[in-house]
Length: 156
Image 1 (tube, rainbow, N blue to C red):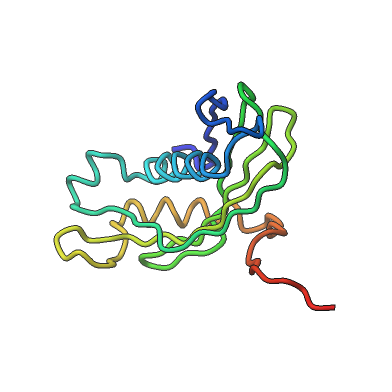
Image 2: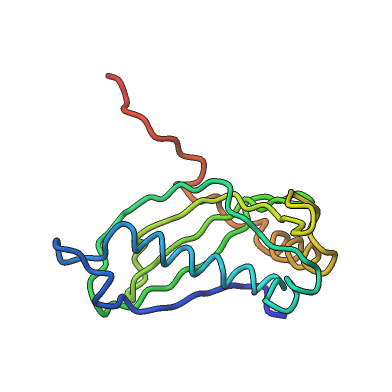
């Protein structure tokens, strides 16, 4: 299995708002689609979810909008596993446009869920192994500057 992850899409017309660029809710949709693809990438496709009765829920997100995306523009989303434990993944997505400019980021916390119990539970062993592999391969990467940000108005 290739551990690097990329999700690609072009901005459809229905994602464009009255300002002529991708609506903020559609950035969330693109990141949500990328999250689903990442979950499959680590081994939790539909068959695996049904076999283990296991899924992943999003607990928290933080989005930074950096540049506009226009209709028809290609976007690419990559994933960086910032941290993980037995049942959670601290994940960071970077969205770039077709020229490689960073246009948005999403930081999120995901939790593995035992569907029989309806609560958090450790990842199935093959999934845990894949998460560990991805994390270890990315360990030398620089921490994204948007990671760990909080919202607030700086007082002068």
